[in-house]
Image (cartoon, rainbow, N blue to C red; front, side, top):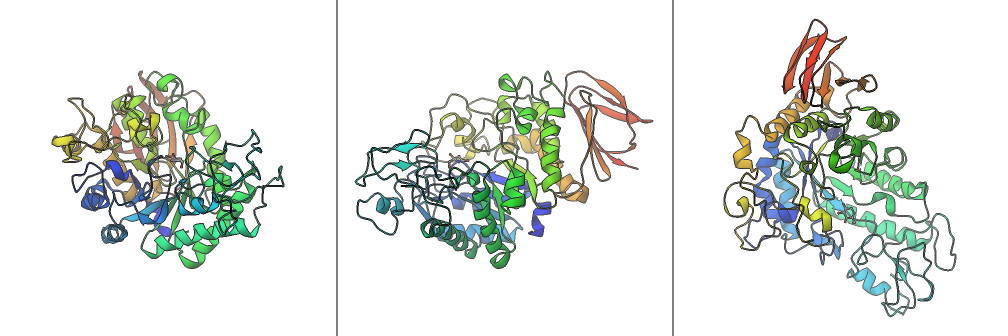
Length: 510
Ligand code: NOJ
């Protein structure tokens, strides 16, 4: 386990929207290099970079055409190596995005696989034996290539699924077992890509749809086995490299697959969703001031997962990512401050999505860009200052329009505002670094009674109290101590804690 993860705080950068250094309207690697000091000053010491590889951008780069070449719009491979170096001199690690489940349908492997004549790549993707064979239980593209067969897609139609085999074989005429030499070759091809970028200085990968490799593998047994073999390779050859799974099943991803981290994703009705998004536009969310305020639904799901995986890896909370509406669509400013106090005081490795430190707004009405659809509104350019395109780009045609509201938050106007979300985010990250108890593997004990507000949890010597609701509460507490941090109005005196609406209190126990 790389030691650096215990104190890691990640910043997710969506490269096309972060900073455009050459005025072509699209963010680029040089732009990220220029903003590394900004990332460092947030307190983040690691970056997850969404895909920067050559791609036709039907899915914003998750449709890879060449895994080993940076997309020209972002720069060159040399620029990426320079980004690694510049980040490392500032103590920042960089995780690239690995997309192992599928490629673009313009990838050269796929061009070969589509050919009628059998070749080295005929089994790199999943084809049926005839175009008349399209079992409805699979998502297939039918009758569009020279080869007599239909192929399976993993996400959008332009993303054919790579072939790692089938755990349960229901159509033996075209489904291969995971240990078939050609499926093993797919695994080796992915390991080769991992080595390629780690050798150039990357510090690891966020793994896209990590659970999607082997098909008919409901329990994900065979998929986890592949990742375990990747972990073994890392332990042997790159022990400092880290992998975070887009999976949301930490027992499988961490304990079996060997991932160092697994994202707590937003799935309808799950624990993460209950915190920030549940109900109609967050109406039932724990952190909505008119919501349920009860942590039970979250704890019931999270705690067993945490207890079963904490010795092997980290569950990663995120403020948001490029696939979900920003939390500003659901919660008011004070609630968002409380959310940040929560995320940065939980165990595991937290992820901050670019712009969330400002409270950037979800832009609901944008026309889809590069396969974003409803996600497009969370992918708008970073808001730096009051200049053209809010400082993102000098171009007249930025990648996406910036927030047009007169009070759009920017780094410039938030940085020195004592009432800003920026202040809370940077304060909380600083506290996390300052108190080892708050870090990734520090202990956690929930202290709450069902339905009772405030809810609280203890992390070593520190106790966090939250009253997310719009009314005040008073309770007895067994802990007394010094107030380390406060949001809203709250006090603790003689074993009684009194919390005004939407408040947070962190105390250090005596
Ligand atoms: C998950 C990624 O986060 C998302 O943006 C992408 O569209 C799909 N995987 C497909 O790769």
